Length: 489
Image 1 (tube, helix red, strand yellow):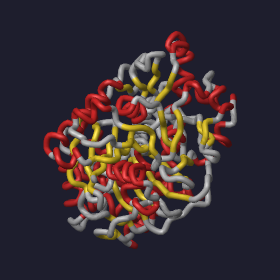
Image 2 (tube, helix red, strand yellow):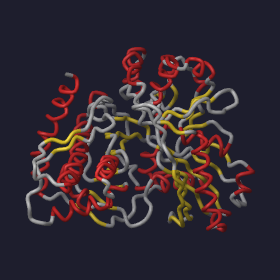
Image 3 (cartoon, one colour):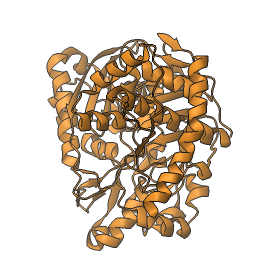
């Protein structure tokens, strides 16, 4: 018996094959590109998702035919909030509008006033969420809005291709702004505020429940001898939590991916819209979670890499060498708001900045400022979660940025919390999705299957670095309103 996890990211699709003991046998990925046809826009063609997912699964089938033949359950994970508008034939009417698309910012205030999105949906109306994208479509492309018969999230469009079923899970659906997050059901009031009703929405299941079975022609394509079930799965962060075992209330992780996430699991719905905290259902029944989200974490380092024509790994190496040189770190500050910001500002117009540069500032100083700026943004998220009554003793560290020891030390100091590293291997969203696939196939409880691994290492906060980050945080917090005021002027 084996299980598949399929994670549809923004830059790639990844498939992970897991054995019955929970070990990853192999994984394969295929790249994805993002189209930006106008400033602030971010789109992908839904067919590109299918092509990338199928390519990853084809590669697994070619390299591990025995393992693929034994698949009994498949779990899905994916980028959240994207709007895939489908016509009566379930074909996309236009490119999908993604999570980091800001075009619907002008629609948010009116939508917020039209219904109790904060109370029922538990979240501020932000342009990254799905509902404002539908409002934008109704305003700017009314013909396509009228032709829309169904709206699916990205991973759920892949599910439709896998099973023929239009279904979503509670965690991903929480990010649409159409879900009654406490009741774990669609809200007629919130749908009505965007001119929609339940007929436009997929059915809902828990992340560990069965949503359908794989189509016969796809079973044959990948050499599967049975008829695998497809689990509800989860949004990327909830699935990552399942991969690292962050289900028990108070368990947490920090994700240093393209965007940055501070995720804390809970046993109740606890919104904090004043701090732009995301309050969502978890991928396991009876659980919820809160997130502070920053839009540019590793993406800020990639931006610096691009403008300096220097690989990100080399930038990190330079900053680490400077850190061990004995010289005092630069006083340069960096605001990582390159694409606007969510927590705690909810400001799509926010912009990044360097401050405190001197003639002696080096490329390593700029890199250090970027690493610290992202860490200080995480500290802002921590404060917003704290205002909602949520704290954590330690956090797992995941994502590509977690490969940098210096960055982990800085984040641990900014949060003043230990960061725990999982053992070598895949403990991300694809593994979490595979675990949910196992639950759906066997009926096992998600809280039992999605157990945390043995820690590989703990990065403890260093007192001197904690003091530095605490001192810098006040200046960091003062910089955003000053920059925003200057831009408005």
